[in-house]
Image (cartoon, rainbow, N blue to C red; front, side, top):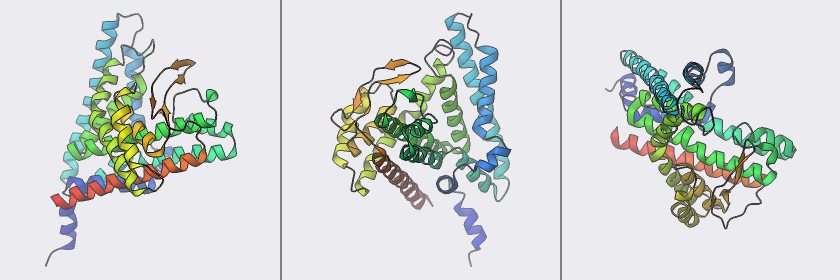
Length: 332
């Protein structure tokens, strides 16, 4: 007779089971605000170390090459320390029967599927009240100037963030978690946090953050393209989406995007829903010129279009979960 407890323990020896449960846990509850009001989120801890190194190493009076070297050192040091800590933690967890529970919980905190959905839903709900409320909500998830956005601009910004961060916040973490375990997931999140904090093209970070920005491009290269394909596949389960246009836009427009990775998700969303995304945008009072994803699509978007985008996002997440289930079925 098979011991049910042992059967469960054997089930969670499969990495795909841990990853799948972490994804489902995040989908269900996200990051509990009450918990992280009392204890710091792991990404906050990473951010504090990055800020510390930035303050002490990023000296504006140094030569550009020196700032690049120091930035690379700061990036590699941060990645190394957090990854080594996680490797040691996993070793300890593997010595206990229920260590997989901790891995699932920690993994779920580093996946941002539910949090992104909630943030974009807040933009939709804000727009129902007023343009001002919509601008406030979208300013929480994008870096562009909210005051320069009309209703269509707010919606486009939210959809673009939904598309791009589906890769950064869900697909890439799941990809590295499945490939390299919890240490791989942590390493990816550190790289992504480094890019979001110091990977900017401005006077302070142009050289200090260049290594972090390029490393983030490498870490997201495969996941970004997988995300575009996931979105296209999800269109087959959504009546309001155009599968043929999604694939056509993906392969036609993605490479023209200013970002080496973001175009794949944005092009897929744009083609699927008939929107025009990307294009010229304003950051910090500076106009960034970029090509349109699906230039022939609609630009006058409204709150109802956000509902369609959120539905496609949900379906794309379910496609990812089904793929993980398939991997689990094959390997268990």
